[in-house]
Image (cartoon, rainbow over all chains, first blue to last red; front, side):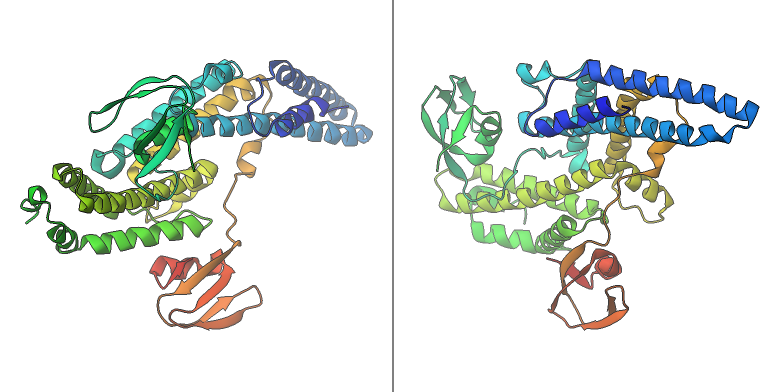
Length: 194
Length: 216
């Protein structure tokens, strides 16, 4: 059946709606081969139709054309939705993707991520007559200036904006300016209490 | 007077300073931005950029931040001002994020519309961002799929994701607007100042552009 592999790609994303599954090189290639195979068959039959004027082949041609189109859409949708998730990572983790996720990306996706990061960086620096503004900060409406956090991992020393250096050890609790620990909370280093 | 304030930490003057700037007051700027933010947030389509207002506000924000640095850290007025700053920054960030999200979602549609428009909705920076975003994404598709398969027709162009202009929005009237058409059956309604309505975005878009209504 045409289109089965392509649909498999979509289902795979659907099944892993929370995370990013490894780039399925094998199936993507399979779909591309199928597209080319269909195209080739259609080309041959289209020639036959042109030469003999046998119109009985036309429904078959149209069926194949629809399958080809569908395959293409599925595989592009697969890529596009992966990009969307990769994009979210930029907002969540910052400029560096955690290694365990990075291994699930294919090379062009890493390139895309870097280009995206660069583009976003350029844009954020240019905001407000080059004053610059980090849009990944201030994600939620501010409720208080300081928040209580617990450290989840041994992070080490962390310098605050006012020059104070604090030591983030596992299970230590701190009362910190929300702005400064927001990125650490997003990266899962700190945990927001209460 | 801007120069006098900081070290004394006199927050009264501080506030005044914010509001007495001529010819346009900081309060006005903030109100405009807050409105733009809410409108942008609730409108399905991209609205006109507010670069001038943003630039003013950001300059004011960094000026205030500079002032706050001179305040003693235990001064409770400092805490209140910092909180206020946080709120302002949140509004700005959320506003710009909202625009970026729309730009990323409907990139090609927005760029195509923008090319046709006299009055540009995107700021220069946003335009650069959108163009680059569109290019890297197309390159990505090209690299993995499109260059390996035959192109029979330009099938990418027919299905540009576009905002749903008929989605309903809540709005309130800033002034009396007589006989506004709401709904597809040409039903007319007089909007009274302060009254609230719900109608398809498309029908309210012009009123929104004139500032006759605002979204909620």
